[in-house]
Length: 160
Image (tube, rainbow, N blue to C red; front, side, top):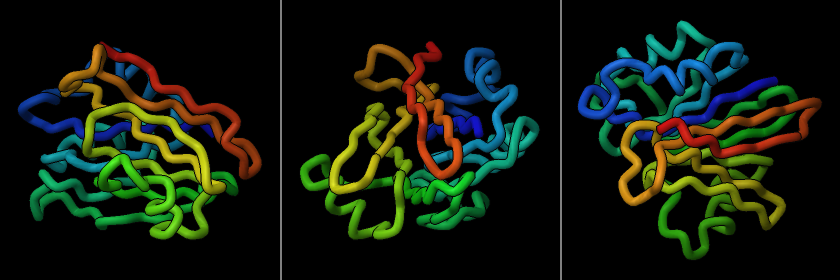
């Protein structure tokens, strides 16, 4: 299963339409995970043209973005938790393990800082932002490959 993870698209200020470099990765995706700060629901409609979308609400998402604060789902046997803001870096793994006790993977956003970290029997993954890199060298998304309940590959990919 090919999963594209993204967060913090911040439309329409930063995302007026799906950037071509992002679209190239979305083609052929089985599912898309958006970790919040969509800002306008039209982004979700645009993404849904590529694959089914699972989204959580970000701190910049208004009431017109229909999404839960957290989400737990199973993708090809892998237990995935999603949240926008995972809190401070210090203690993040333990905090995410407590918040999602059954998860194998937690996808989050908010900081715009890409992260792929493991510990406490958990992998946490922030794909960064494809459109608002802040202090990062590139805008980024995440590519995940899941097979039979196992995350076989996780990559943070520059798109700017």
